[in-house]
Image (cartoon, rainbow, N blue to C red):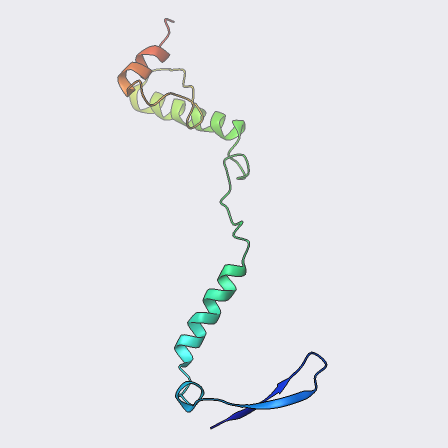
Length: 111
């Protein structure tokens, strides 16, 4: 049986303690120790990671929206031979509860 010294707060030896072989004599389970340390270290993290929003991504501003509208206008003109005005709206600017047909009809305005 392994024995350990028992010390007080002044680091003076005040006795010995016999440790059980059933508990302290068992072989080490390396994968279990590894998982326990990984779990402990993961719990210490702040967890503040996040993804970039549209405002933080390069090239996702108003200029990119205008460029997309210009590309759509040009492709429609090449494919159909008509000149149209294209307005690209940023994501999440139209209400989803209305329904697509109603949203499109509301956005049409007489020329």
